[in-house]
Length: 111
Length: 115
Image 1 (cartoon, each protein chain N blue to C red):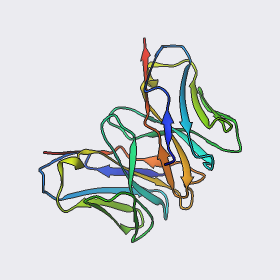
Image 2: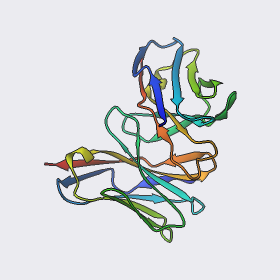
Image 3: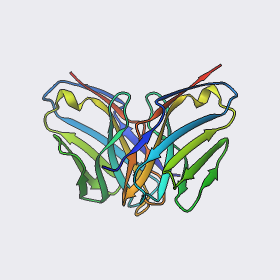
C-alpha cells in the first residue's frame, strides 16, 4: 500500500553543523506534508509543513524541501543544537482527514 | 490558544482489566479528534478518528473502542486489556475540515503497560 518512509533511522551530527533528514513517499496524490519532532516521553510537536504546490518552505533554523518528481521530502536544520536531539517524523496527507506517518529518524547531536 | 490534555500520563494495568483514557481539547470548537498508538521505537498507527460528537471511525480491528460524548472530549476504552495493548497512546486534534491543510496537534501521550 501507499506509505511514507525514511532513509536513515539514526543520524549523528556535531553541534553547530547542519542536519538533513530525508523522507520518501510513494503516493503521488499526496498534497500536504508535515515534519514533527518527538522528544522522549512526549507527543510529536509540529515543526513545519509544506503543500504540494511549493518546493521549499523556511522556518526558524529549519527548511523543508519537496521534490515531487522523485517523491522526496527533506528537513534541514541549520546550526544543530543539543536541544534538537529527538526523533523526527514526516507525515503526508493522502486520504482526507488522515495523515500517514513515516517510521522516524533519530537525530543525535554531539557536543 | 488551543491546548490538548491527556490523562493519565502513565498507567499500569493487569491483563483483562478495563481501560479508559481521556483526552480534551480547549480553545477550539468542532475539532477533528484522533487516537494513535506508538509502539516502542516505531511510528504512529491511527486507531480512531472523529469528525463530530458520536461519530467514530475505526482504522484497525482490535479490542479497543472510542467515544466522543462531547465536542471536545475523546475517550479510548477497552473492556479487557491484552498484553499487546501496551504502548504509547496519543490523542491529537486538528481544526474541522482542516486535515488536508493544517497539521495535527498532539497531546503528551499516555504510557500504558499491561502486565
